[in-house]
Amino acid sequence: MSNIYGEWLKAQREAAGLTQQQLAETAVMTRSHIAHIEAGRRVPSREDARRLDRALNTGNVLSSFLPQEDDTIANYFEPARVLEQQATMIREYALSFVPGILQTKQYAQALLGAAFPPRSDEERDKHVVTRLERAKILNNPVTPVVWAMLDEAVLRRSVGGPEVMAAQLLHIAELGEVGRVRVHVLPIGAGVHVIHAGMLSLMWFEDQPPAAYTEGLSIGRLLDSPHVVTRLQAIYDLALSDALSFKESLALLRTTAEEYARHD
Image (cartoon, rainbow, N blue to C red; front, side, top):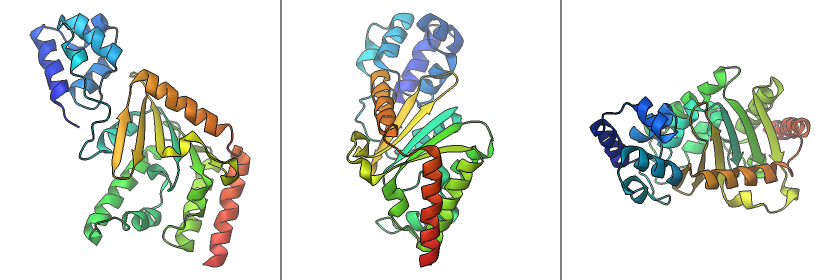
C-alpha cells in the first residue's frame, strides 16, 4: 500500500505542532486511527478526511487527494493481514476455499501449490508458514471473536484429496465445538445470493472504525468507507439468515468429513 498520503498527513500534523492525540481530539477521531493512516495501513473515510482538513486548516487537500477505492496494490492482502491481527471480531464468508485462518497445514500446502505460474516448493512453503502464522490468532481463547460462513461448495471442493479434506473439515468442526469459532454453512439449496460475488472478511476493532476486505482473482480490496462497510455487513447478515444453524452446520461438516474418509 502506498504511504504517500500517510506521510503527507504526518508532515502536516508535525508542521502544525500537533501530536497524534491532539489531532485526534480536534478532528474527533481516535489516536490509533490516525496512527494507522500515517503508517499507510488505513485510508480515512471521506468524512474523516474533511475533519482532518478542518483540524489542520488544509482547505480540502486531504479530502481531494484520498486514494481511490479501486486502486490495486502489489501485495494486495498485506494491509488486510495487518488489520486481521488487530481485530476484536472477524466475520468471514468463503465462496470457494476454507478461510486462511482456519486452514490446516496440508490444506494450505495443496491450495498454495496450485498457483499459476507454478511456485517452487520452497516458495510454496514460505507462503504456508505465513498462512499458519495468521492462524495463531485463534490461540487466544477469547479474541478475536470469529464467525465463519462457508458456502457448501467449500465443503464439496476437494483440495489435496479425501484425507486432507476429512482432516480439514474436522478441524473446523472441532473449533466450533469448543466454542472458538462460530461456523455456518450456506447450503447450495439456498440459491443465488449477492454475497456469492466473492470472498468477504468483515473486521471490527477496539479503537478504530470497522473495515472490510474482498478478494477476487489476483485482486483484493481493503474497504473502510463507512457506507460501503455497512452495506457489506448487511449483505453478510442477509446471507447468514439463509445459512444452516450452528448445530446443523457442525453436523454437516462431520458428515462430509466421514464421506471423504470413506473414499480415502
